[in-house]
Image (cartoon, rainbow, N blue to C red; front, side, top):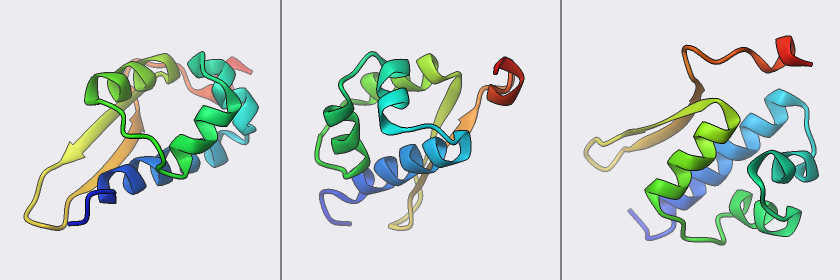
Length: 91
């Protein structure tokens, strides 16, 4: 697995979350307490962030980050926390 494969998976999952929520990168950045430029870089897998940072971001968004460790076909995903209100309900 190439070095950036996990970053690409995380960036894709973050982008998918944003698309599902129908929010801009600016809104996602606001929710995360980050700059829009940095958030865009996360989606493009330009930043090597720690698992603790990913966990903190997921918590801010009311999500659970799950990493499936399997032989060379690992997949990551971001899912709603079971106890979190839905985004649609909070709008």
